[in-house]
Image (cartoon, rainbow, N blue to C red; front, side):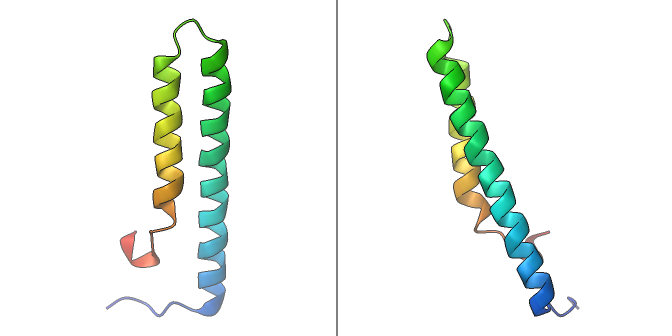
Length: 66
């Protein structure tokens, strides 16, 4: 049986997801900037895409997923 999710826990969970999403978005941006400066940008562009997609998917998680 799953423990009850309190409002305090939910606020913490939402805050953590926002932080992780912001981190992934900043990593994607950083990778794209590096790709523009690189002679071999494809790997960096792929890395940016992974971070962008992770940022989109992170908000779909709920405490029951972990």
